[in-house]
Length: 195
Image 1 (tube, rainbow, N blue to C red):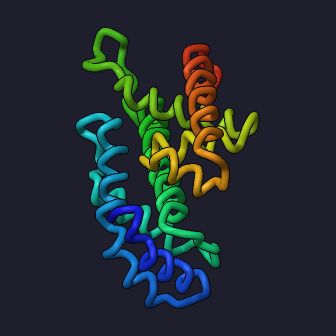
Image 2 (image 1 turned 90 degrees about the horizontal axis):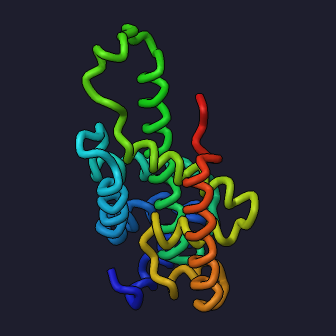
C-alpha cells in the first residue's frame, strides 16, 4: 500500500474506533501485507529456529489489536505503529519466557561440560534492546517512539513525523540521538535483566 492510498484504511480505522466492528474485517485485507512485512522484519532479527513465524506473529498481533477498546486511530501510520509495538511486545515476551525456561522451569540441571550449546546472542540482544528502549522512554518518550516507529515499525522519516506530529528534522535528530543512547546503554548492560 502506498502512502497515497491511505484514505480507505484511515476511514475504516476511524469507523472501527467508533465501534463499527465490520470496519475491522474490511480493514485487515488492506493492511495485511504491511503487517506481514513488519512481522518479517522482526523475524529477521530473531534466531532461525524461533517457534513463531511471521504469519503467526501477525495473527497474534491482530488478536491483541482487536482487544484494544476505543482507540482513536488517526491514520494508517498510527495503526502500523501500534501494530509494530504489539509485535515487539510479543517477541520480547517470547524471549523472556524462553530465558525463564532455560534458567529452571523444571529443567534437568547439567554440569557445564554437559551443555551442548550456549544461548542465542540474538535473543539476548533483542531483549536488551527492548529493555534499553523502555529505559529511553522514561528519559525521553518521543525518542523512544521514534525508534519504535522507524526501527521496529519500518516507517519512513516522513511517516514517523506525521504520526508524532513533529517535523522530519526533529525525527532525524531524535533518531540519531536515540541510536547513540541505546547503543551506549546496551554496551553498558544496564538494561539486561538479571532474572
